Image 1 (cartoon, one colour):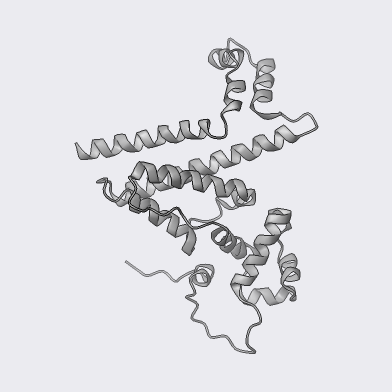
Image 2 (tube, one colour; image 1 turned 90 degrees about the horizontal axis):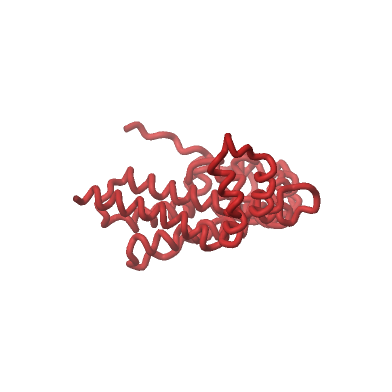
Length: 246
């Protein structure tokens, strides 16, 4: 298989740059730049992260940053990796116990840094920290008899579920806090649906609204709803393992 040239941003994240650097000793490094960008994102949201604002944060001219990071897009890729915490320790736990913790921890750090949600589709995991998350999920499933392709698909599915749940929680928090005519949370959403749905065209959804299903769901959106959906996924993984071992 042909060996692909490392993209510059990946080489930087892994300390694999080979091009010699001429001129005076750098006064900055990539880590300091990324830390500054993360501080800005935590404070002002992703829209506040500009090459000029990061340069101001570290006290250099904007053009000086391009010696360390090729573009804002590259900076965002490195930020997404650096802002993630370390994955939970596997510690010999059964795969289901570990992946429950892994998925919840994935959701929780996205809840703490909502700007990461905008970066989730930016690039496949390529940095040291994001690949440790993937590695630990694969390791948790190592004794299940599943192949690497299946294990990677499971990790991707669980990470996607964590992202969607975090995005939903943020959306509900925003709408619940709105003071205009925005839909205020799941209960408000159910009320809106009740006003527009045609029972002939949407019989089951209309029945669900009349049964206050969205109002009930709003009460368990944080933990019970998350666990309910996660258990469905984990039950499917268990069925896949059982089928493969039968």
